[in-house]
Image (cartoon, rainbow, N blue to C red):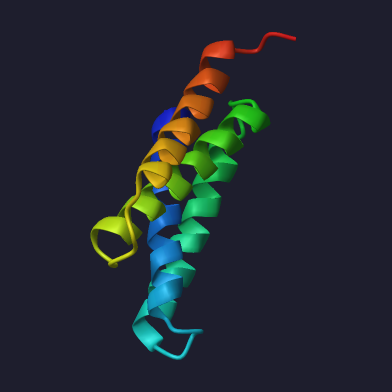
Length: 107
């Protein structure tokens, strides 16, 4: 269950990041409200997941999901540029997160 909550929390990171952009510096009410609600929910989910998952791996997964999805949203829906370097960089983020998960709890 912790992994499911962590993944959803990472997705909520994308929601709060794009809402922050849409709020235009907190000058628009509803994007600002969405930002606060999704930020609190994302952090609460991360906190819940950290009860049973290692902090390094869980945080990397949370940030990796949020950063990757936010970059994709920016490129697909917000008109940000797409380049081979951006795509390769996103693949490297995902590969790093997968690598951390596969490494398990080795010392």
